[in-house]
Amino acid sequence: MASNTFGKLFAVTTFGESHGPAIGCVIDGCPPGIAIAPEEFRHDLERRATGKTRHTSARREADEVEILSGVYEGVTTGTPIALLIRNTDARSKDYADIAAQFRPGHADYTYWQKYGIRDPRGGGRSSARETTMRVAAAVIAKKWLAERHGVQVRGCLSQIGDVTPGAFDADTIDWTVVESNPFFWPDAAQVDALESYMDALRKSGDSVGARVDVVAEGLPPGWGEPIYGKLDGELAAALMSINAVKGVEIGDGFASVAQKGSHHRDEISADGFLSNHAGGILGGISTGQALRVSTAFKPTSSLRLPVQSLDTAGHAVEVVTTGRHDPCVGIRATPICEAMVALVLMDQALRHRAQCGDVGEVAPRIPAKVTGKKPDAEKLDVKKLDVKKR
Ligand code: EPS
Image (cartoon, rainbow, N blue to C red; front, side, top):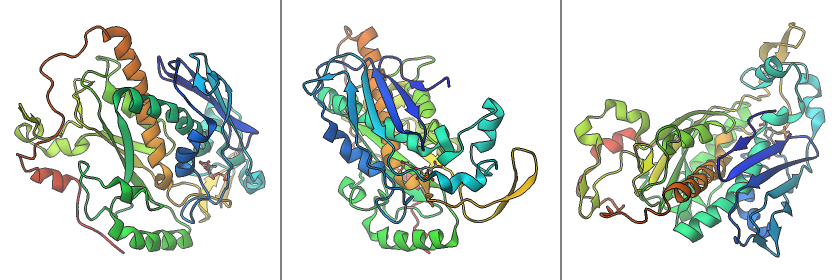
């Protein structure tokens, strides 16, 4: 299958199916000298994993990473790094009854049309199981970005269905709150209400969409390649490649449509930029401000609620999907979005070093921090700060 490789200098190829013996990746182009141990993958893989709370799929995978190559005595050697994770909890019988049916909203029909054959077990290659390897590869990217450039890539859930955080500002997210609840939710006061919301949703058999925000801080100005390798363009493509993604916004995104230019342009003073509507990117190149990107996930299509469809013979069928499905795929998408942002940044950092490494630091460097001189009233509208509890 083509197009399983991502990145130019830090190139990640993933392989494997949800119910095959294993999933894996090969990272080619990783700089030598990065210390990495198998246990360092655990934290992010557990953040992404199913079966950790009642709000995600009940499948319990061990997600043990085996490093097959590219690492000697705990340090990357510059040769291809192969990572392998064996699938340990696939239950293919859940798919026996729907093996020849097209689940509406799933990739069953399009894979069938493209290849004329498909692996129906757990969605095969189209399963979110594949995202495990992106998160694993990004553990190395995140480590290099942090150690080499002081870049931190962090994300949170910023909407589930029509519920938005009661207190949310991308510039002042309390990351300890985000990491201390099963939703990566930034507002501690709403977590109980979200638990009830998700319990009711799961009982109803339905699913709901979500929005994930990622903020990358510490970026230097200059990363990103105009014209066809723009940082925002590559971020959008990377995030859109995640299962169930239907939209990506950079900075104020679609809200920019209703803004005036006098408001949107981020004023510059000697103390720093006065706002960050651009989301840290101008002309496809990082400004040195925080990178802000937001991703929309559609509601999960595998539901136990009956729905009409066709089978591969063209007969009308009623599809009922049993098995262990997420009522909201967006809930565990935060580490996946972080991973894709980190992989893009790693690749762009290496590309910048390759072409412009000799340019060095160019004066003046505008400080990243927003000084707070200009009240950002319109931004509040954009994020819909009203809480809609049910
Ligand atoms: C998925 C369906 C479920 C999820 C799976 C994603 O798979 P299965 O029915 O085979 O258990 O559990 O997610 C994972 C296994 C994972 O590791 O993310 C789908 O249709 O995308």
